Each structure stands twice: as structure tokens, then as C-alpha cells.
Length: 308
Image (cartoon, one colour):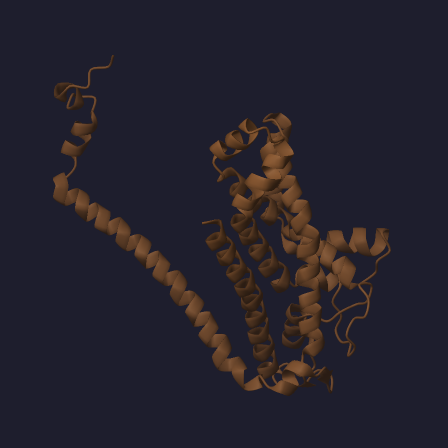
């Protein structure tokens, strides 16, 4: 057995005691700890300050544009007046459509990878592919959606093509979050269920998934947020410059808040005149994303309380 005597701890190779003795003593370690804690606290404060600054900036410049007419009417006069109601409906349709596509496929993929698949070279390649897919620029997904959904599958520029494209883009986020949630479930849960005679699927369905559900919802929240805020994928596959009607079919083209902001700020004929509308639309988009996140967070909190 290795000698752990006091002499061995302070030998010339540096035992634990030797390492501590080489430092500046207890006072030095505490100063180092305070320094790191200060760094972490500062990083958190910078993030919070940046978020607050963005919200203040958008609210201070956009609240004047918010009115009942702005929220419930379609754009008028070459989008220099009127409202953004079709954009709100289109954004909701695209985000909910994307999560309806990505969530079941992503959760099923994560269950297979974590619960059924054996570790090996193929699994490492698949996981590497999923990780790399999460870093692909959104405009590439837009071009993929244009080529595959709009042209090859014949969907054209439509709500369905946009939702499928956004679903493909959010899929890696949901797979990653779901896998982490499944890994966080203790193996003793699985062993106890299997020991009582349940099948592997019964164990996953009745024991593992309910325990991992809050983590899965976290992935869904991240997916909704990303789908609602993206511009590049929908500008090729779903969004149009102007349409006063609400889509009555998933094969209809739609207006969307991110694309509406992009058009008003870069391609409009009266960019300065529509500046308040741009900030108002951005404020509504932020509120819409935060609102959808809040609903999901409240539901997740209720689930956690119920599980306790």
C-alpha cells in the first residue's frame, strides 16, 4: 500500500501537504478563492447588465409604437403604417410547427442513443455529427430547406416548409438537452424497475422519461426561442415581404416578425420613417419569445413540484 505518512505528503515530489505548503498559506488560498469568486460574480453581473441594457434599449425605443391597432391590424401603406398581426400569427405558427416536428424526433433519437445504442465508433460519429450540426450557420439550413422542402418536395414557400426547416435546425439542441436529461436520471431507478420485472421500454416510459421531463422541457424552451428568433432559414422557405391575410393552410406563405424587422430595417423604401415600427416589432418579438418561454418554465416548475 502506498505510504501516506506525513513525511510522504511533504516529500520533494510534492504531496498534498507539500502543495499547500508551497502556496501562500491559508491567507493566500482565501485570497485566491475570493479572487475567483469575484471573477465569477463579475461575469454574472456583466451578463445580467447586458441583458438589462438590451431590454431597456428596446423598450425605451419601441414602447411608443405599441398600440391595440399595432397588435391587431395588418400593415398598410407599404408597411409604413398599420400593425403586425399577420407577423405575430406567422411567427407563432413557425415556432410551434418547428417544435412539433423537432421535439418527438429529437426525444426519440436521444432515447435511442442513451438507452439502447451500444458505445462504439459509429455512435461516436453520430454524436460528433449532431454536435457539429448544432454549429452550422442558420443560413445553411435555409438553403437546405429551400432545396429540399421547397423544390424537391414541392412545398414551395410555405408555413410547412419553414416549420420543417426550423425543426431541422433545432433538432441538435433538443437531442443534446434530452440526452443530458436522460443521463442525469440515476441508474438505480432503471435497476430497481428492471428488478421488479418491468421491460426496458416500460422502465423508460414510466420511470426514466418522467424523471427527465424537466430537462427535456428545457431543451424545448431553447428550441422554441431559437426557432422564433431566426431570420435566415425562413427568408428562403416561408416568409414573404407582405401578405395581409392570415394563413389558412400550412401550405400558405406567411409573414414573420424577424423577417419583418429585417425588411423594414434594410430593404424598405422608408427606413427612417419606419424606425419606431422596427423597434416596436422587435419589442413584440422579445415579448413573444419570453412569453412562450415563461409558459414552458411554469409548466416545468409544476412538474418538478409534482415529482417531489
